[in-house]
Length: 459
Image 1 (cartoon, rainbow, N blue to C red):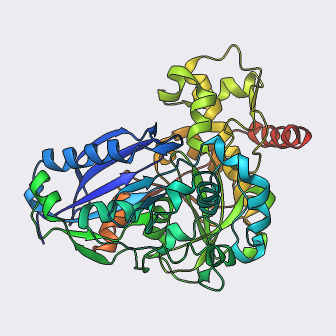
Image 2: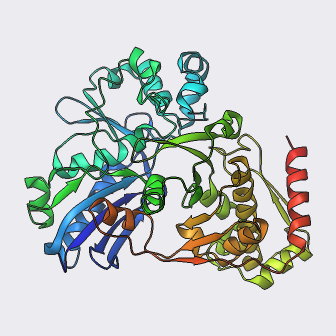
Image 3: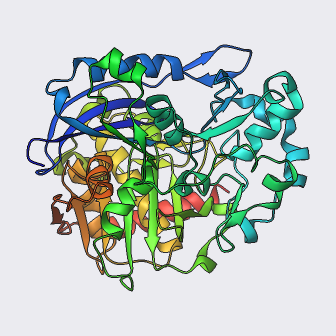
């Protein structure tokens, strides 16, 4: 109805945000953000779910027009889950970047299903959810033994708001080692360890689990009839906006950006996937496997740009200066994923770059990386860029130049979780796409060739 608002609870790996969205226009009317953070509560590194919850409830209580909030949609990053006791006590909320998971690497490797069945690559640290569960079983049995329920991260927030437990397919199928997407069933690992019995019944992302709990209504002042949806994995939220509005037989790719840059290619053959390149099949909101490749683009961008360079908008002049100085960033600047995981990143001829030029180098690096992943996925066309990188002029322009045979589109600022929330509630998406023209820079082709050559030689 007119004037209705949707609250989107968007819990990313780096930042957590609460936004109010006008249900009809799609306009973001208000938001509040904080850092996601981690804590060491029980001797393991954990997601700061208590701190985030305080922010979420405070934000909802302070939100202007909160009486008009008719629905809340949780969106959250992957490789995260919360273990609960029978009384609802939080037993553990492991952070996937904890190096402690490495202590059970070899025994876990022997237990997991083959890549060909789960399309979930063996990843470092705790990026496979099964690895987290196994680690807790082996090293902290006092935490795992009383576990009565495991909630995937978006559904944890849905439960905290509604008191209703659920499991949803996009987070279940996100490199967890727990799901076989072609069979639409739990993996042998999940069944043998009986983790499947701890996951609540599955519901679709847009399904209404219930209304806000009496406690949440009292604390926030939100109407007790406000609905809480099951929720969705964040990269899948971006993908769903475009998947739902395009023909089933159209081949296209969505580049979802944030802490991770995730490329999901609709219509790409799953045979293109290579475990060694950190390629996988995500599972979309319809339960279908989607060929995917990714790297930790947000984290790498910040590392390359450094200091104030990460906050400066790169210009064409700064990009030309990077090319003229033969400056280059060679992967990888984050140790938690991507086709070059395990390598130490290196900057070449970058010592004299200004802050804005360092930003241009970071944008160039991320565009080269994205271009390579698109090639791995069979060069889908068109390509839609969503999230912060869609607003980076040099990233989108360089990618359009590198992929001169493809149409490159950038979404406006209303796409991603906000538009997905509206879509799940039955509203027509309103985000706009702008086509990105290529740059007239012949040097980029030679630069790409050298970047790929130097990258290969560092294997």
